[in-house]
Amino acid sequence: MADMNFIMAFVEIVWRSLKTCIFRQQCENETELVIAILISLLGFMVCVVIPYLASFRVGMGRIVRLYRDQRNKRRIYALRIPKRYLDKDPTSGDFSVRAYPDNSSCTPLVCLVNPKSGGQVGEEIFHRLHKLLTPYQVFDLRHKKPAECLRKFCDHKKRRFYNFRVLVCGGDGTVGWVLTEIDIMDYHNPPPIAVLPLGTGNDLARTLGWGGGYERSDDLLNLLVHVRKGGIVDVDRWKVTVRCPTSETDEGPIVKEMMMNNYFSLGIDAAIAMKFHTKREESPEKFSSRTGNKVFYAMLGLEKAILPSSLLEDNVSIGTRTFPDGQSPISGGKVPVHHAQIQSDWEGVMVSNLPNYQAGHNFWGTPDAHSEPHFKPINPTDGLIEVMAVGGSLHMAAIHTELYDAHRLAQCNHVTIHVKHDIHMQVDGEPWVQPGPSMVQISFLKKSPLVHKMDSVGWKFGMWLGFPDAETEAEDDDLYDSRREQDD
Image (cartoon, rainbow, N blue to C red; front, side):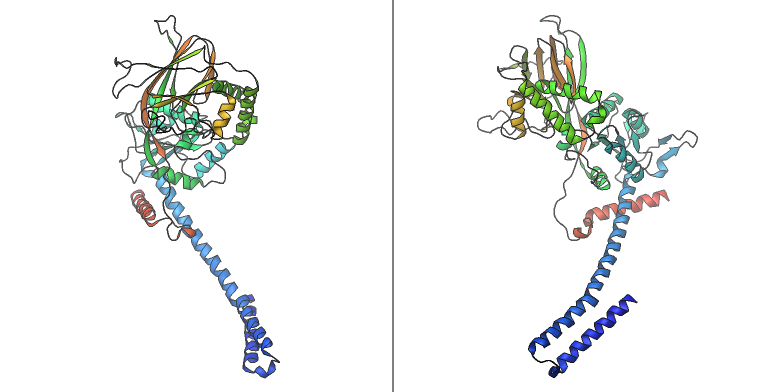
């Protein structure tokens, strides 16, 4: 009825305008004629064009929504475990996964979620992943260890993993925990690991292209698709061994042994991390905001800048070596030791594997090819680690503003640090106070496959409506059709 009223009104306006145009004697001058024509055009716009465009937009919106729903269904289907490979126990609710062929048509996603990370975001992501995928692919790390979850996707007789990818939802500490559990399992083909960053610094996630932190407004399904289509890179990992020497010739027993994925530090940086860690353990509810954590961390750094800190000159000595491929200190390789000169105003030493440090800041910087030809930018896959030093909190603040770099000391694959007195240390954000005298050795451990995010290239026609490129769409269609036929 409303459309008919619009049409009748439009017809009436047009008829009057036509009468005016035909019988010009009804118009006293040319101005009235022009006004009559404009009124007729305005009536046409109001009564016909605008309603038509509105209905077209609503119709196109429905089409786009239906298309996106269908596309999302296909995307999700490609991430789920095929039903035919699941063996469920109706009494206990447990399940097991049967062996499936290693091909691209079956590469499910296994999600390990640490709900403690990211405040309440971790809990929300756990429930959202349950809805998007299946309960057999999403695990809560508060109740199960990573190895216990991943053993369901293994061939235990052949000691190998099936073809799948792991999404770790948590901070860098959670990623390190999962990698360590996979090392303990010692299977032949460790699965590639991607990171959904929920921690405070998230330096490993930044290096792999996953960003500095997940927000509630981010498209979770789109991120899962990036995990499935992301590239795989073998990232270096290192072993940190702490000993308590009994004499100059005896290295003494091992008191701590840890895996290092990101960095090791001692001195002022580790002291700030220790204080932050202590406060968070006392009142975890006050540290649920990523931004609030960074502000509190900055306040601790300012406090260290005001209060006197212990210097390293008379306490720390650093020796570095670079062994050729295939050699190590155990194999008896004869490589000279380079001793770093400790300056009188240095307060901290860092050994980094990643270009991102302290929430995305590049302490190593970009060495000048002419003045420092023996140094090169950090590469987490080149089998080398970078040793550097800072002068204090103010120096670190200047590095954050990109005004200065840290003092570059060495690029090597073996570091030995001797400490005379008690000092703060940390590995990947886990701090402690190390009694002196002690000796720290950092050596190459292995490479582990991690998933890095592939950047989209180019602007393709139709993306304004939300359509993916033709190649990706065809791949998802083929995968969806083949999986549906096999399941049926």
